[in-house]
Length: 173
Image (cartoon, rainbow, N blue to C red; front, side):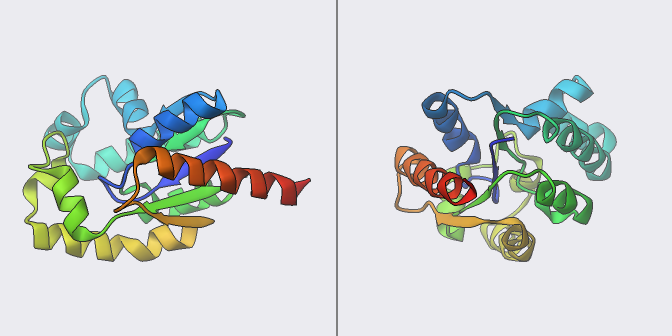
C-alpha cells in the first residue's frame, strides 16, 4: 500500500481516495467494497442477515488481503481502526495512515438519513457524535497525519495529502 485513509463515516475517505488514485495513478481499494465482494452482498444486508460481528470478521479478512498489495490507496471503513487486530495490520502495512475528520455537525450533514450505512441509519445526531467521539482514540493511534475536512473541498484534501506524501518520501530517501 502507498497510503491508507481512516476516519469516521462521512469524513471523505472514499471521495478523497478516488481523487488521489487519479492524481497519483494508483489503484484505489475501498474496504467496504472489498467486504461486499467477499460476502457477495451489500453491507446493509450483511448487518441484517449476519450481524455486526460477522461484518467485522469479514472486514478484518479483507483488510488483511488488501494491505498485502504493493501499490494502491486504501479507504478503510469507519469502524476498521477500532479493532486492535486491525490496528496491528495498519501499523505493519508500511504505508502512511491519514486520518480524515469532520465535526459532528458536518458529519451529520454529510450522512443525511444514513441510507446505505447500517449504523448511521439507526442513530440520532447526538448518538452519532458520541460514536464519533468514542472512536477518536483508535483513529488517533493509527494516524501519521490528521486533516480536518469540514471547510476543505475533497480536491484540497487530496492536495494536502499529496504534499505530505512528497515530504514523507523525501524523509525516507
